[in-house]
Image (cartoon, rainbow, N blue to C red; front, side, top):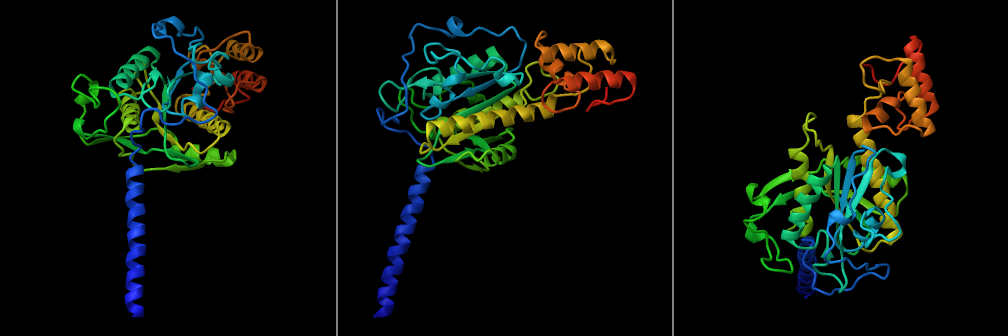
Length: 361
């Protein structure tokens, strides 16, 4: 009798475990949510003027700094990016992305608004294959971003999931969105990509995990091998990796250094999501600098070190000269990630032959 009871209990437990595993698999698709689903209390809806175009609000900066582009979908991923939106309708407090934190990059974010709860939304990067594709190619051509971070909402947890890659599913395998034609169709550029083809993130994922942990941001960072889900997050994540792969050559005038997708758990507070975003962004900037920055001291790029280079570095410190990205890197002779009076002095000592910069000419 006791064996019969054990067998029944074992079967019941096995059934429960199997049910949970299947449920997890379904949830892990980052699936379609019913139109009108509830929004978090912190969400602020800002109506987007239907006749407004990017030309009405996007003004390229005249500081010659490279651009990092970020995109979001459902909250918290749109709300956590709001400070970086150049659209005054969506960001009445004002765009903060102009040479953000003095790090030498202009930061732009684009995302939809949700007046009626979860669903397709309205504005940039609506939760729709055709509109996401249109906005993706429009803004990447306009901005030529040196890095792209796309964000999407995941589960009711505190995870910050750095997706290792994304898959281009056959057209009929994608989950339906909210508006006909419901799936990617032959009008979209992605049809030129092979079905079931994987592209991989070029974000500094390990560094981001370390930075989030070091900053004690209350999220659970993790890295996956591949996001094989079949909805808009994987769709835009594939575009991020695809854009990088076609713009990564060092001699490409629109070179892209890093792009990838991050899934964000929606149990975290908005303050935590903003904090994690900023830590991630700083880490990506540091990675770009490590890849591209040459700390040679040759600020005017004439191939030799002179007192003029030291003078230009000092003017950068004083704020009377706005450098290009390459000039900022060169002026950072000591390779500390910022230009200080010590860099100007180090350049001058290198000219005299009694000092050295981080990188040689």
